[in-house]
Length: 298
Image 1 (tube, one colour):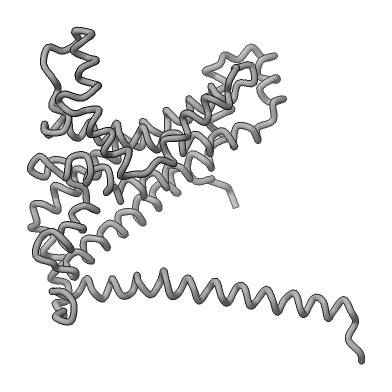
Image 2 (image 1 turned 120 degrees about the vertical axis):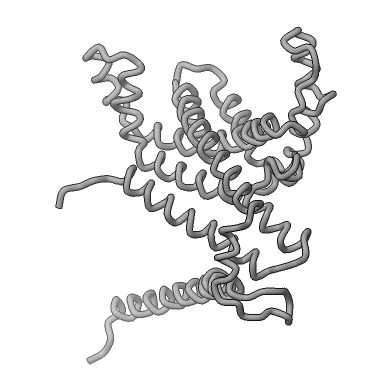
């Protein structure tokens, strides 16, 4: 029985579909899963280069007594606990304000707030370090307003250095999350807000009862991506404080870098630390999905 034209076209389409799927799968296996498996193997070895030797789980047990790792873990979680909620709430509030059709120059404000997240990580980190230096613009402004009498040691004091890191990453990434919320807000039917207005709902009530629930999937997404990004924090710490003073601001990612390129190189131990980060991200993402995910009755 001769093949119909429709069947031939469908067969051809399926064939090309499998070609693209197979190519993508091979690339993912090569550049994602292979490095992950190789890193896991390396985490059970010690040394570097051709001198790697198998040590089993010793690198992981070593973490339990590593004071610098514990400090880096504490700092990273401190950044996470403070910065992520502040950034998410701030981005959501800004998005709500900039979604108001009555607001003039909305495009200018949106662009201005989004611009930081497209700037170079190194460039903006160095600018932040310059602005918050002892003789920097921010201290001069505070002293000019007579708010402080002497410069605040933003870079050299353990507490203020952490605050500076949090300010820097919040400034850069708030606009990134704001874009997601703006797109979500524009997909909410205006009639829902109009009905709430007829019922006499306040702005706060509309925000908590309509906006937040309708944006729940996007809030979950931005929370997970922000959590993952903060756990991998590197550029700001490296370029603003260098992890100092005395490892007061060091992050896990910077500690991994130090283990590979600053201290006596030990790629096996660095790989073990990196897998701890992977495990933490998986656990936190799972918890966030359980807390923020939809609970449907089946």
